[in-house]
Length: 158
Image 1 (cartoon, rainbow, N blue to C red):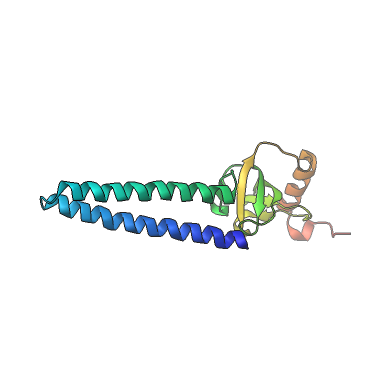
Image 2: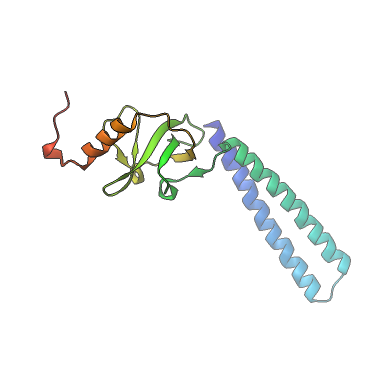
């Protein structure tokens, strides 16, 4: 939870810097257009450059807090493979397998018999990861086949 606050603080600071940059650039444009003091315009641009350096530093800090992998919302995941799924930002990752289901992408979560539609998961996905250390292909296919079988034809769980 502490990381959520930290990320929110960093992102709000980035937003504030963007707004300040916009105001300064507008002032520099008006001053330049009015034939004003060239040194004043240069000073405004120097302030904008300093803000851009700070903003880039903040973005790097956000990336370090979130991790080295890009975080994807469920709607952004399009490639099949293995992902680390986090229910909340900064939470513990769970290794999931993203596969193609009959109605779109689905994720096979550890400890669950049936895969779930990826759109139903509200967290973030890191990856895709290079290694597939999950269940063997035959087991994944059996789960996928079970997902394609109508509910009334499925065998009851023991």
